[in-house]
Image (tube, rainbow, N blue to C red):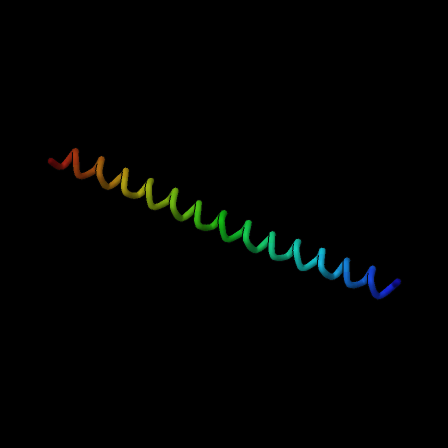
Length: 51
C-alpha cells in the first residue's frame, strides 16, 4: 500500500515537473517571438522614416 502511494506521488511529481518545463519553454518561445516581432516592427518603422 505504501509503495503504491509512493509510486503515485512520484508520478505526480514527474507530471508537475514536465508541466513546469513545458510551460517554461512555451513562455520562453512566446517571449522570443514577441521580441522578434517588436524588433521587426521597430526596424520597419526606422526604414520607413529613412525612406
